[in-house]
Image (cartoon, rainbow, N blue to C red; front, side, top):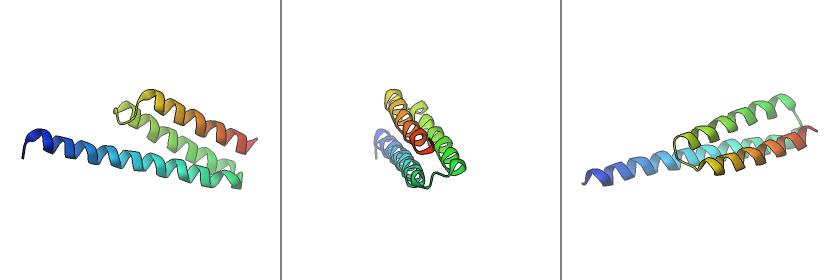
Length: 82
């Protein structure tokens, strides 16, 4: 097998794993929003932002996409806590 093919497989696994992780954290946050529990929402928001920022810094998602996702979940969290 060519080295480039091996690298592509490894990178696609890493990318897919991180994309799934982002979706999981965002889903957990959105599930916690109706409860209006400030501590849960704050901790989940912080974790989701960390994962999204990490993915952007590694080039898995574009920095503008990361910024947009963070903005949207932060806005939802603030509305739920208001």
